[in-house]
Structure formats: C-alpha cells, structure tokens
Image 1 (cartoon, rainbow, N blue to C red):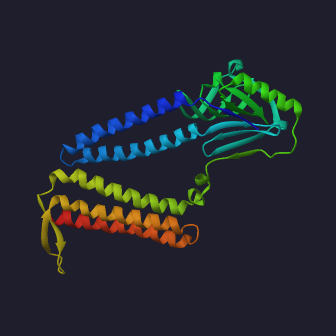
Image 2: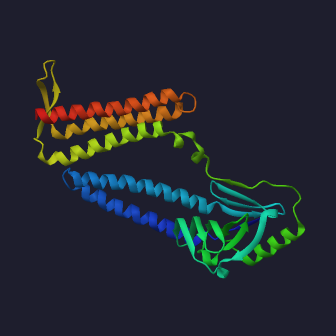
Length: 299
C-alpha cells in the first residue's frame, strides 16, 4: 500500500489565523464587558464569547482532520482518511479519473472551506454528486469517479499518484473489498437521534441562558438591596446586594452540568435514568425562574 500525503501548510496557517482572530476579538469583548455594568449588552457579549469558543473548538477539530489526512492506495482500493472520516473506494468500481481543470460544468459545494481546506459535499454538472476531501479548490483537485460519485482529493504529488493509480488498475485487485463511507464515531451515537433527550437537554440549557439574560437586562433597574430570603409567612427576612441574585441562575447552571454529565454517563445503560436527570434539570430551571419572579415582585 502506498500513502499519499496532502499539503496542509496553507490550510493550517489560515485556520490558525482564524482561531487567533476569534480569540483576539473575544479578548477585546471581555475587556469591554468587564469595564461596563451588568446589562443585556454584557450578557450578549458573554453569550457570543461562549458561542465563539465553541467555534474555536470546532475549528481545532477540523484542523486535526487536516493534519491527519492521507490517501492510501493499493491494488484493491483507494482509502481516503481525513481525521475521523474514512472512505474506501474499491478499485474495480473506479469508472474514470477526471482532473479538476477538465471540469466543464459548475461545481456546487456544501461544506467547510477556507484557503487550503475544502471538505464537504457537492454536485458537479455533468458528473454527479461529489465528496471533497482536499486542500485545493475543485478546479485543482483530482476526481476519482466510482458508482456515479466523484471523490475530490489533492495528493501532494498529483502526477505520481496518477501513475500509481493507473498501474494498480492495470494490475487488477487481489481480493474483494467492500465500499465503506464512515464518519467520526461520536456522530453515530444514538443520542443524536433521540428527540426526547435532545428536547430535555435543550430546554434546560435555554432555561439557564434565558434566566441569565433576563436578570442581566433587569439588573440596571434593580434596587441595590434585594430580599433574598423569605420566612414561613412569605415575608422577606434577609436582604442582600443585588449582585447576589445571579447566584440563582448559577445554581441552575451547576445542576445542568451535573445532571447533564451524569445522564450522559448513564445513557447507554439506563436511558430512563438519563431522562429523569435531564428532566429534573429542566424542572429546577422552572423553580429558579419562579424564585426570581418572586424576588423581583417583592423588591
């Protein structure tokens, strides 16, 4: 088996540059929010930073796939490896090879791309559906067409790859290989198809975020002291600084993290227990909302 490397340098540089830019913007936003009183705007800034950190993690995952990309070729199959993605194309199924410079029709692309990184799906006029795992644009890729699907790749040594492929095709296979197309293992988890589990977790998460946002929006108009505890008759018996009201959604966040984590650990063995944990996390958010409304009314 011969392995053909990609050239990840450009995609890596641009990807790291995007990550650096996001982190730089986040740093500026955090500094701005830290110098401002709590408000809806500071909440939105914090929410953006949280989302952008998720984007940074996703970018890091994509760059890891780029760094672990290779095209393996033998007499039996072409194997495309890109991080946790793997496509096996048996050589007897290869109908033809087409250079990107020979494409006459339009290429419609859906996926992730930046200079040096083209990964996703698409449609090539006159050819059919396409799967792209490459570091160059489609017009510079090599398309291996098998069973009506065009696999776009970008071996570092295109001429050497094409010569080797032609030789392997002329020699013929030594054994039968089944076509395989598989993604990362975590995308196969049953949880992603579990609507009830997704709704329970999403509901609890939205409850926490909405409570933080609601209190942030109301914070500028709150009195400096708030009733934070009530006696058996419902009368306030303890006052505290208004900042302490954020302890309430913080409790909800802790409950969400703990119950969410425990539910995830139990999911494969005891799914009902996971539902109970996630559902109780959502119920806690409702109770905390009721507590906040009660405090604001008493204020």
